[in-house]
Amino acid sequence: MAKAIPSMDLWLKEAKAHESAPRIGMYLSHNGIVRESNKASVRNGEAERKVKGMLFSYDEEKLDSVIADAKAMDGIYYIRAWLNEGELKTGDDIMYVLIGGDIRPRVVDCLQYLVGRIKNECVVETELYE
Image (cartoon, rainbow, N blue to C red; front, side):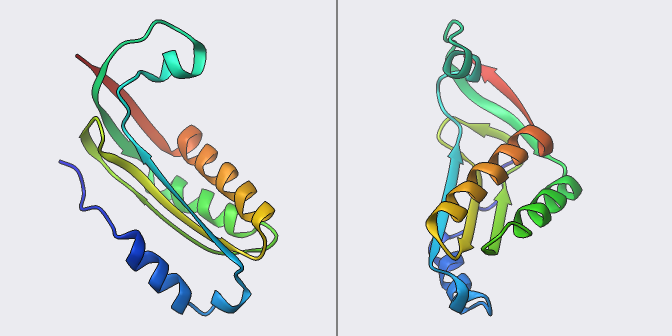
């Protein structure tokens, strides 16, 4: 069963009240969701298979380590991440990430870095087909 979905509005409110807020010039959020098209068709041009959902899990220790690495990047002062678990259906949220930093290029780079590492090192996704 999927976990309760967090509120990005609440996350932003909490981030703006955090001690790091005066140093932050930009917050950037990411909301990954389960899509209908299979990963192999989108990424590699393989034949499309209709996805009805996925089995999703993650390693919390690895996630914590990856977040710590991202927080060490220049100009990054705030990171919050939430990952779902279990059997998800098309349209369900997979993850939320919120990053706060001093300037846009650093925040954008951090988002690319962090989400890439989460997807490549921390999660197990098994697509379920119709």
